[in-house]
Structures are given as C-alpha cells and as structure tokens.
Length: 278
Image (cartoon, rainbow, N blue to C red; front, side, top):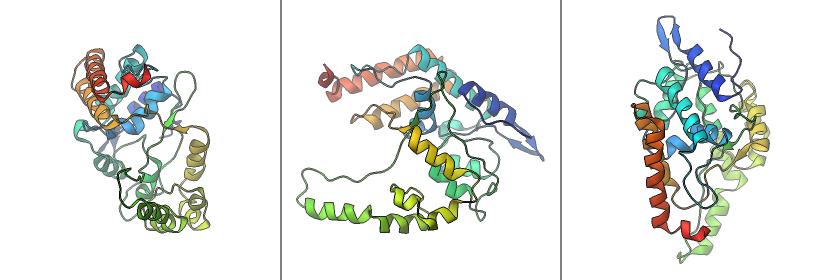
C-alpha cells in the first residue's frame, strides 16, 4: 500500500483513515497519540498541529484562546482522527503506551518527538525497525509548520547556597563528552550540534530512512517553543488535556473548550501572570 505523506491536517485525517484496516489478520489503526489527562498530551504532536493551524494558547493580554473558532476546528479534526482511527483506550495512553503501540506495528502514523526513533529502529524490541518513514509535520491552512520544541533542562535555584557547585555540575552534565556518552547509550536527545553531527552518532542514524535530513530541516526552519512562556504551563496543560478527553468522550468541542478556557483564565488570574501584561 503506497500513501503520500500528509501535507496538511485534512490529509492527516484521511491518511489515518486509509491506514485503518486489517493486515494479515491483525487490525491496524491509522494513528496513535498521547491521551492521558496531563500536559504531556498537549506538548508534542497536538501542540505542533494546533500551532501550525494558526492557533494560540493565549492572546497578547494573556486571555486563553484555546476555544477560538480556528482552535475548535483543529481540535475537532484531531480528536475525530483518534476516535475513528486510534487506540480504543486513547484517554489512558501515556507516552510509553503510545511508543509501545507504534513499535508493535499495529499503528500507521505517530506525530511525536524525533528522538523516539532510537526505539523504532531497534530490531531487538521493535517490529517496525527498518520500515519507518520520516517526514515533517503537516502544515497548517496557510502552509506554515510550527513544530513545538520540548526538552528537559537544568536550572539553579536563586536561593541555593551552592551556586558555584551547581553551575559546575551543569557545565559537566551538558558538556559534549557527557552528551556523547548519553547518546551512545541510547538517551537520544543531544542538545549540542557537535554531538548530533559527530560521525559516531551519524553512523548510527544513517540507515534510518531520511531521519537525519528531516530532523535537521525541522530544527533549522520550523522548530520553536509554541507554548506561551509562563509558569503555569503544567497546570494549564493538564486542564487542556482533560478537555480533549471530554471531546473524545462525546462532549461538543466548543462546550469543552469554553469550560477549559474559563478555568485556565482563572489559573492565570490567580498566578498574577495576567496583571503583568496590563
């Protein structure tokens, strides 16, 4: 079966439908994604699609806008694809569940973080090793791709009594040598170009279809932080994710997102964040 990678989110939905079929007596689902009621469900594929579609989590005055007409339209399309073509228990899907599903060969597509490829391509654990194609995320209606960046980070508490020791530890932990050691051990998230471009790393990834080209193009041209920077991202993401679950369970998208937006506005108001923009 030959399908052209989806160029936009309507094609993404149609691709998922086409991939949902029985193969050799096994049911294949067209798409999988995270679905638990926490911020992680928002932070990867969903937020990339939401942002590419031209939607924002907040306007310039920190009013929540996840219930705007365009946001509702995208969210309906995203959830419809999962409802019709995704896991039967999508609302309990953690990142690990989703990864296991995709590696089982029973799911056709997953819009997710690029470093999971190290698991996809491990023939000792994955049924799809050597069979995965990589492509950029679909574009929004105006042809724009906004690929959300998520990575872990280290920081120093301003109340720390050992700031120098903390700073020296961070220098060590993020050094080229340590990131190279981690990457070669399978912790596939190098944040230094020197590690990504090292011949030892390149030799591991060179046979993964066009993986290196896609990752490099995405980082160079499309990757950005799509959440509005503020301290309440986890709480806001949790409430937003629960709204997606409500829609999946049958609540009208506008109703679920209106309620979530009102709750999120209260979270921002309570945090004092909104007063800083006025």
